[in-house]
Image 1 (spheres, rainbow, N blue to C red):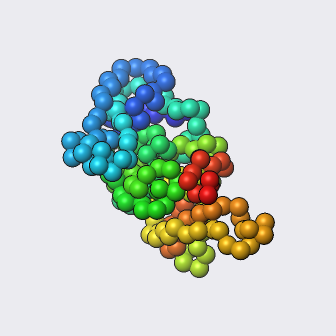
Image 2 (cartoon, rainbow, N blue to C red):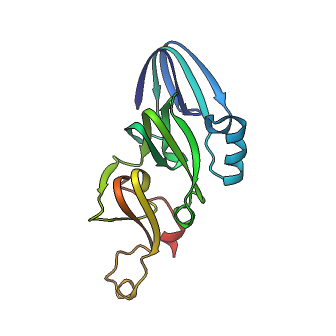
Image 3 (cartoon, helix red, strand yellow):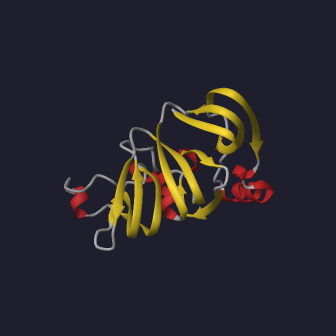
Length: 202
């Protein structure tokens, strides 16, 4: 559960994620994932669905969703790429948008686009089990199962590749039909469980 102390400021949170509050709060549903009418049109076209509410007031507001584990990500003018289903709450000043992910999103079952969060502030992301933060450096690329991927930040490039090789059929491979290869310098957030994915069924 995430407890947010507010003194007249606001946060943007997943619609319906408020479980309790004290003090005085107002709740307002926002269109287009908090991006206005343009964002609403963009999200309908891309299929990246995210329903957001603005919470404003004085007191403490508590957020949760399906008993998920919650991790805080601090942004200092950089950009976070996160699946919409894993985004719980952001500071109101952070900007959200959508970004094309290509085959990676299709294989993970989340569509061809993902949500972006950028600016100065904090974002709360959710995971099925405690999230693990993995570092990527130019010398050490990272390979991630699409079903375990949550988010990433930093100067990273991602490539979608098949994990099906001769060793897989001989029972010596990873067991995953597809993988995401991250290269560059940044952080990748993964969860210790896997969503049902197209890649996992191949």
